[in-house]
Length: 331
Image 1: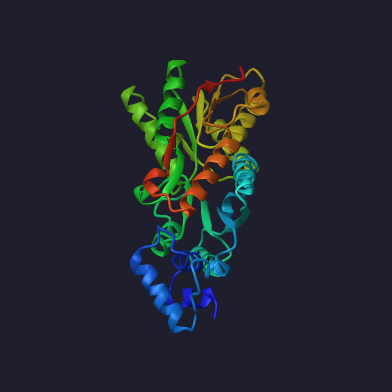
Image 2: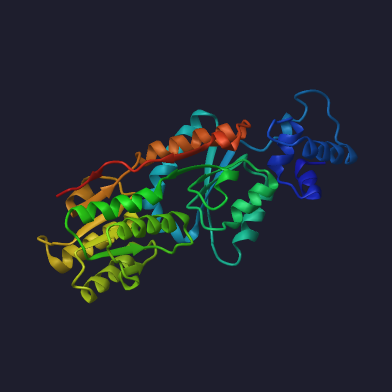
C-alpha cells in the first residue's frame, strides 16, 4: 500500500494526501477525513503523530516553464531560478525545472507530473490568461506560487511586477522626451504580463491624446534571432517611428541591435526595455531600462513564499506586487 495509491483512488495529488496524513492546517477537515478513511480501507495503520512521515513527498519544488520560452531563460528567468534554487537549498529543498509544451498536450503532461508525487510544491513561471495549470492545482489543493498573476489572482499565492504601471511609465517617459511616433514590440497577450503592459501603454497614450495604431504593434516570440529579423523589417517599413517600447528584455536587446545596424551608432530611435536589468550590455546598446528588483532577489522572495505556502500560510498573506524601479539609460 502506498500514498500514490490513495491519491489515485481519491483523484488527489500525492502532496495533498501526504499533507492530509500529516495534519497540515491548509488541508480541509473534509479532505483529511476522506484520506484517512481510504487509508484505513486499504489497510494502512497509523501508529502515532509521526507515523505518516515516511510517506511525505520528497522535499522537491518543481518550477514549470512553458517550453516556447526556453530562449527567455537566458535573459531573466535563469537568474530568477538561480535565486530560487539558492534560497531553497538553505531550507533543505531541491529545485527541478521542467519545460512543458503549451499546446494540446499541456494539461495531460502536467497531470502526469503532479500525480507522480515527486514534489511538495510547484512554482509557475509566466502565467497566462485562463492558465489550465492554475485551475488544476487549485482543484487539487497543491501548494504553489506563481511568478505573475492572472484573472484568478485572489485565489493563489503570487509575486508580480506592476505591469500596468510598467506600460504607463514607458509611454510617459518617451512622451516627456518628445516622442510622438512610438511603436510597441509585444508578445502574445495570452501572457498576462503582456496584456497588462499593453493596457498601461494605451491608458497613458489616451491621457496624452496620443494614438498608437494597431499597425505599430509588432508581436514577436522569445527567440532573439527571429525577433531581431522581425524588428529590422518592422523598422525598415516604418521610417516615421522614433521610439520603441519592448515588453520583454529579449525583444529590447533584439530591437536595439536592429536599430544600431540600420541607423548606425548615431541612431535617433529610443528603445525602452520593460523589466530589463540595467547592465553593461543594456548600457552599451542604449536601452532605457524599466527595472524592478534584481532577478536573483526576486527568486529569493519566490522561494520564501513557496516554503511559507507549504507550511500552510494563507494565500492572502502571500500576494506581493513590485513597483517598477527607476528608469535608467546607457546614453
